[in-house]
Length: 418
Ligand code: AMP
Ligand code: GLY
Image: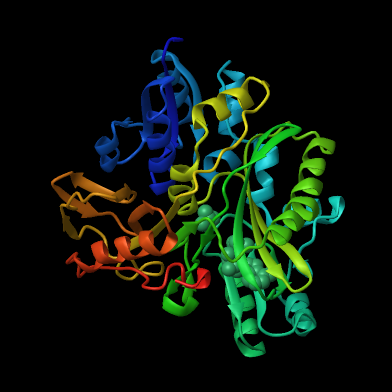
């Protein structure tokens, strides 16, 4: 057997929990470090490292000192700020796109231009630098209209305004809060899906797909969040519609990345709505999704280490094998999330139960006496023979908890008929 290696994951959320956990399970890996990680990661043998994800020099120093084979970057802000470029300049391998490619997520305008250039189907849209023009044009998109901040906003910079008055007020507020630019878009109708493409420049593999639940409350009500729950696979997505996504979206996107010389080695997350007229892209993200990662990686039967290692070394990518089992997870969030989340509440201990995994995210304190740290605290997930079984197991567990300062959605998986 070849010698085992160390790897580093950058980030601290549930997504990084899932990435680090999966890598720690690889027979090729000795130790996964996660900077800064979270205390819950210790439950799966991952070692949190006290270096903030913004301290690129500190991370580079750590990677060198601990003979890290490569680094997997979780969050978008580091990528937009050029972490991969800095690692490369220091002679280190990091999985993720360059700062230039990360603009596909960092700027809505940039992404829309890319889609227009390379023939990727998207919503009818226009970009505005001033309030008067945006308000003048808003009727052209019909109502509801989608209003997006141009920059990174953690999934929370999008407002779907049901009528003109709300739209005008939102436009004024966004420009008033200092937004230099915003995008207006036609509101697409159809189910939303998350697709993840693992790229090694022109060579790629598609990971298992998932569906997120963006709104805070049951029935897709309330404000947009980072995501409140997810599941995989997607029984409602036909093979023909999946193939359309590959042909009409993935193919021109990868062609654009290669033609545009992005030399993309990382994950591209394509957010899609399957409309009556076919799949349309609503966003690119330059990383894995949170909470989708927590439900797709347990279903990945190919070693994630092998996939990333091959991509970073420009070797042929192994095939992606999907475990036929289903995975469903529900996010436990702080009361008040996403607008005014409670901080510091006592969570106690989460009992171990067969078939249940806790993917920890925003938690602090000790494993036996955890405290919430705002936002999405953790995900309760199960992998089982069917989605229904995974669903029932997760909700039985959640219903048995007593967490008055937290909330969760009760309808994760409803669109799959659960
Ligand atoms: P984004 O930050 O672009 O992913 O948008 C956040 C959420 O807003 C998406 O996950 C969708 O639920 C919703 N959304 C964004 N764009 C559109 C659109 N053109 N039509 C309908 N819903 C959208
Ligand atoms: N689940 C949505 C995101 O990661 O952006």
